[in-house]
Image (cartoon, rainbow, N blue to C red; front, side, top):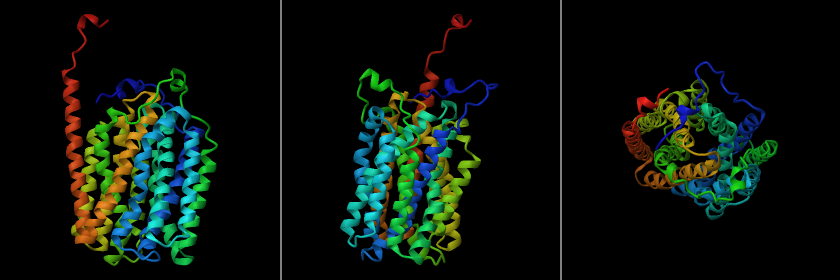
Length: 409
C-alpha cells in the first residue's frame, strides 16, 4: 500500500490550510447530535432488553449488534450512492431513519421487534456514517486529514461522554419511553443541521460516467486492523454497564463516561499526531493499548480496575480510527472517497455487530471477565496483522528504484 501523504504536505514555511470552515463545523455538530442519540441507546438498550423486554445477556448482545446486519450489507451501496448521488441526501435521510427507529423502539416489548428496529437503525447508520466520512474527506485539507478525523470523530465519542449519562438520567427519572423519544429528538436535530451543509461531492465522477466500485480493494488490508479494534470496542460498549453493575459500581454509566471523556481529551490534545506519525504503526500501537485495557478489566474485577482498564483502552481507541482512516484516505482519489468510506465502515459494522454477538455468547457461557479477555486477544491479533502490513509496505518502498542522479537538476 502506497501513500501520497508526503507529496500532499505543505512546505515547512507554508501557512496551514484552513480546516474550521462553516461546512466542516456543521458536519461535526450534526455528527455530535446523531451519535449522542446513539449514546442514549447504548446505555438504555441492554437494560431495556434484560428488563421490560424480558430477555437475557445473549439477547442484549444480539439486539446491540443486530443493526450491523443491514448496515454491513448496505455500506458499500451507500458508498457508491455517495459518489454518484452526493453526500447530502444520505446524511439527511440517515438521520431521519435513525429518529424513526428510536421512536418506534419505545413502543415494542419483544426481542424480535427490538431486533427489527435495530436493523432499521442499521440502514440509517449505513447512509449517515458513509456520507459523513466522505464529506469529511471532501472538506478537509489533504495535509490535515488526520487532524480533521480527530476533531470530527469527537461526536462518536462524546456520544459516550454525553449519551449514556443522559440516558441514565432519563431512564431513572422518567422511564425508557422518554429515553427513546429523547434519542429520536436528537436525531431530528442532526437532520436539520446536516441539511444546511450543502453538497460536498466532487462532480468529476458524475462527468466521466464511470461506476464507483462497491468495495475498494486497496482499502481492505488496513480495514482488517481497524476491524480488530472495533470488534474489541463493540464488546466493551455492549457489556460495560452490565459489568459495572456486577462489580458494584454505584453509577453503571461511569465506564462509558470515562471512556468517552478520555477519547475526547486525547482527540483534542493530540489531534495533529496522526498527521506526524506513520499511520499503520500508530494503528498497531493503538491496538496494543486496547488489548492492555481490556486485560486489566478481565483480571482486576473492582471499580478501580474497571476504571483504569477503561482509561487505557480509551487511549488506544483515540488513535485507532484516525490512524486507519488516514492510511486509507491518503491513497484514494476524490472520486473514490465514498467507496473508501463504504469499505472501511463495512468493517466498522462487522466489528461492532459481530463483537457483541460473539462476545455475548462468551459472556453468557463463562462470564464477563472472560469476554473481556477474548476481546483483548482479538485486538492483539489485529496489532500483529497491522505491523506485518506496515513492514510489508516499508519493504516495497525500499525496493523501488531511485531516480538517476543524471535526472536531478
